[in-house]
Length: 192
Image (cartoon, rainbow, N blue to C red):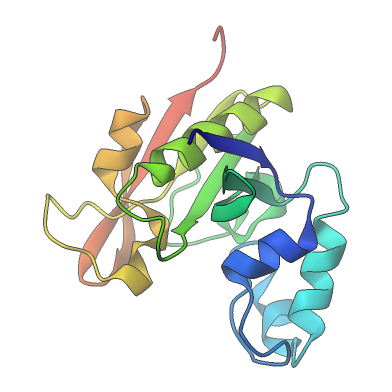
């Protein structure tokens, strides 16, 4: 069956990928880079889910979802960099003031892995950014040089995944995840 990528406008489907098993559990909900850290640290119980419920109703939505038939299979967070903590992050360089979008989380549900869904999600994130007029899209994957990345830390993607989608390395960063350096990868959307 073909994988379909759609904007993340259905809260139940977003929750199935990034939400906790218990609605009141304090988990990321993919908000760590989306909102200021002071706001994120204050959220407790169901407040994170409530905020995500608001975000999926906004235009643009907070990301894209992959569907395998009727089954939601994956998620990618993508949004204008100016609305994320990457606009102020000291470890990730801010290269210019162009209308840059950021993609920072790619997750595939167990049972759907190993089928290239992360590639579809990244392509869908690029398409959404382009549809909203982005000039540049960037990501901050690990440069693991082919070494295995722990699944809990693989959400940022790998340099190779981004390169296969046409991104090029634009800068090193001061960020390290799971022992691997993160690099700033960019794709220029002007003229495409």
